[in-house]
Structure formats: structure tokens, C-alpha cells
Amino acid sequence: MKTIQEQKDNSLNYGKIISVRGSVVDIWFENNLPSIYTLLHSGKDKQIAVEVLTQLDDNTVRGISLNPTQGLARGMEVETDGKELTVPVGKEILGRMFDVFGNTIDHLPPLPEIERRNVHQKPPPLSARSVKSDIFETGIKAIDVLVPLERGGKAGLFGGAGVGKTVLLTEMIHNTVAQNKGISMFCGIGERCREGNELYNAMKKADLLKNMVMIFGQMNETPGARFRVGHVALTMAEYFRDDEHRDVLILIDNIFRFIQAGMEVSGLMGQMPSRLGYQPTMGTELSKLEERIANTNAGAITSIQAVYVPADDLTDPAAVHAFSHLSASIVLSRKKASEGLYPSIDMLQSNSKMATPGIIGEAHYNLAQKIRHTLAKYEDLKDIIAMLGMEQLSVEDRNVVNRARRLERFLTQPFFATEQFSGMKGKEVSLKDALDGCRRILSDEFKDLPESAFYMIGSVDEAREKVNTKTDTSNSKDTSKEDKNTSEAKPKDSTKENTDAAQNKTKDDNNNDQNKLKDAPKENSDEDQTKSKEITKVNTGTDQDKSNDTAKDNNNANQTKSKEITKVNGDADKNKSKASEDKKETVDT
Image 1 (cartoon, rainbow, N blue to C red):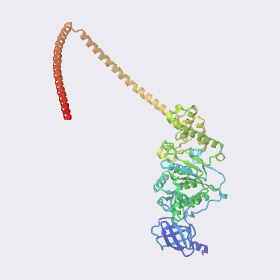
Image 2 (image 1 turned 180 degrees about the vertical axis):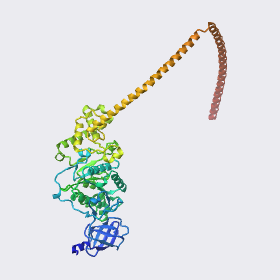
Image 3 (image 1 turned 90 degrees about the horizontal axis):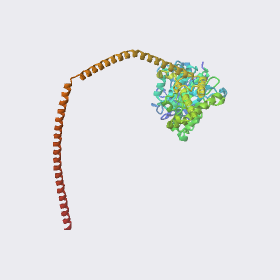
Image 4 (image 1 turned 135 degrees about the vertical axis):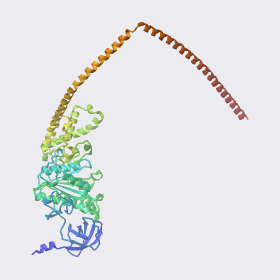
């Protein structure tokens, strides 16, 4: 026999719609007014879900629809069981893709009947939180050395399209799943459908879905759904942290879309906007989401969030509130991406609150500061190098530039997520090896190695191996080339001998002909000379006669032509003078 409490939980409460304005729905109840966050169902098959956000009076509530309201009309029946929005949790959700209601959207078989939990959970109390600040190692040199992430903290990832943001997120998921035996979750808030589909396929090809969960509130969905999808992802993550005591890495793209969805909901609910049109409750709403991301005694939820800054204005209220929750900021540079330096992290603009001597240690802190100083000095010298060249720098500045360029290339790294595209095997580098490599580069231990030896390697010792491998390859190529030249030398020599013999034979023939000509009779030579003299005399006389006749004709023609020209000019002058006299007489008259 069921208890009274169980009967009350299973009982349904009915109301009716009295107003529909876009996504905002007003519902009247005769009694038992639903509490805030209660989920109501209406529509033809009760497929439209409305979440109660405010109570207007003793019998009326106002809610926001979590899906399109097409088909709703005044007077339609609304039912509720008094429960709030719930989502499935458990090991069965690994490798699946969900929407805001916890429904699978990956076209795979539906989930079995498993536990469901309320998405509206309180942040862990201070007594349950870990007071020790631990470093979250990613296996990526540039992040672990200069921008260390906090275990159970929040890191902001700033980057546009095409700078390697998705690749960096994918690599972090791979290292978390494969090496740290943790769970990775991706939450798309206001995400484009195309990008979500591409990410899902990339994870599937890389075989990373088995320890991963993906939740999407896509861009084409209502503001209510986009506003709640972040809470759905954290509810699933909290199960693995609190119940299975596992570390969870949750990636949120984009946290600004969460604030934007809250602003739309606030406007629809008729609340008075605050500064720049944002909702007056923005700080509270963001804190309810961000404070659930914490490091507890049971486990940790570490978050990496993409943050969009409206109009690049860091004083925008959305950016200010988001920055206040972040423990690290990673800035991706398009300039570095164009140079092929991946991951394209701007070392000078990125920073972390964990980079203090008390947390990462004195040696790590001093080394990171020295790296930043070297890179900053190189950045200042770039203009001088571009105008005057390296030759105009002092010896000390040249050494700084050489160290900085080697450091930039050493902090690049081949990723597991890009093996199929780059053809280079991915490498995960421990923090110890990364620090050791930077220290040895700054001490000029590898001054004799070219900069290219440090590009896309793991530990620094691979640079020398890379150079030795190239040297062995070039030596083998030179040896094969010499063998080839030796084999080609013999036929060339025989060809040369044949050519010399032919030339000698031709020379002897020419000498014989000349001797024959010398031995010719003298009479023939005298006759030829006499004939040539006579011919020359005749030709000379003829040419003189011809030239005399031509000169005479030319003189006669020139004289005739000059006479005609003189006559024409004289007539023209006479006509001119006559015309001027006639004009003068006319003027006098």
C-alpha cells in the first residue's frame, strides 16, 4: 500500500493557458500553485515543456518554453507532476550526445531506464571543497610551463576561427581520457549545428567518444533551452565527480552565449534591463553556473571555456563578470598560426593566477619569468631586425633573439588529434621534461643546433637526434651520388678517346690538302694573277664611269629642283606683298 507522500508525488496538477507571447506562457491554476523551476507540459501530446520562472499572483504563474510554442493556444490544458527538469546520469551516458531534456540526438538506440537527476543543484559547500591548489597537467608544453591550469578551476580560451581552437580542445580531451583516466564533456551553448556535427565526427574518428559526453543547446533553439543546457552538462559532470570520484574536464563553447540567452529570457519576462541591456540578475545567474565547477575532496571538475568579447571591449559587463570567475586566460594568436607555430598560443598575453611561487614552486616561477622576459625582448627587437637586419644588433641582443626563436619552436608540439593530417606522431610531454628543455635552451646548451631542429618535437633531447638523423641521411645521399659519378666516369673517358682520335684524323687530312696546294705548278699561279689583274682593271674603269655619270645626273637634278623652289618662293613673296598693299588701301579708304 502506497504512502500518502508517494500518492502526492504521483498525483498530477492541472491548469490552463491564459496567455502566449512568443516563448512566454502564462498559466492559471485553481489551487496548488507550482513552485519556481517546476516543469509544465502542454500541447497536443504534451510535448511542449514550460519552466516556471515567476509567480504573478495566487493562481497564475509565468514560464518560459524550452522548445518552440507552435500549436499552443489560450484555454489549452497544462499538467505537471511537480518535478523539475531532470537528465539521465550514469556510466551509460558515455559516448552519447544529448539535448537539454536529456534525449539522445545521435541516432543511436535509446538509453535504458537509468537514474535521472534534477539540473538545479547547489554548489558544493565550502566544507567539502579542497583547500589545496593543484596543477592540472595537460601534457601540452606551452600551457604547462607558462599558463598552468588549476585542477578544479576555470580557464578562458580566446580565439577566432582558424587558429587551432578546436584542435587544442580535442588534444586536451585526448590527454585527459587517454592518460589521466578522466571523463571529458563538451557543452555547446548557442553552438552552430555544423560545428557540433564536425566535432562529433572528429571525436569519433579519433576514438575518443568512449569516455566522453556531448551536450548541445544549438543556436536554432529557444533561449530557454540555451539558458539551461549549461546546467544539464554540469549535472552529468557532478555525477562522475561525486559518485565515481573521477576527474572531469568540461569544455564550454561559448560562455557568452549563456549570458546572452539569460538576457533574452529576462527581456521576454518583462524585467527592467540593466547596463547595456543586460539582465539585472546576470551576476547571480553566472555564479550559479560557475560555482558548481569546483575541486572537492571527492574529485574535481576542471573547465575550459571559450569567451567571446563583444566588440573587443573588455569593459563589457558580460566579459567583466566572466573574467572574475576565470583562473587562467589562454589567448590564441592568428599571427603565430599563420607562421605554422602550433599550438598558436600568445605567450605574452596569456596569464594564469596559478603562476605564483607558492603554487608552482620557486624554480618553475623564475624560469617562466625568464622565458617571458626573453620573448618580450625579442618582440621589441623585431622592428629593428626588419629594418636593419640582425647584423646591426649587439652580441647580447643576438643571443637573446636566438634563444627566443628556439624557445618559440620548442614550445610547438605535434598533437595526437592531428596525426592523420600532419603525418607526425603525437607527443605528450611531462612538465619536468618541458621545464628541463626550456632551461637548457636558455643556458645556450644547443647553440650549435639550427632552429628547425626544435620545431614539432617532444622533449628537447629529440632536437639533437633530429639533427643526427638528417646528417646520416645526407651522408648516405652523398655516398650514393659519388658511386653514381664513378660509374658514369668510365664511359665518358672512352668517349673522349674516340673523339680525340677522330679530331687527329681530320687534322692530318687538312695538312695533306695544304701540302698539295703548295706543290701546284707556278705557271698556273702566274696565269691566275694576270687574269685577276685584268679583271680588276676592267671593273675599276667601269665603276669610275658609272660613278661619274651618276654624279653628273644628280647635279643637274639638284640645280633644276633648286631653281623651281626659288621661283615658287619668289611668286609667293610677290603675292604676299600685293595682298598687304591691297589691305592697306582698303584701310585708308
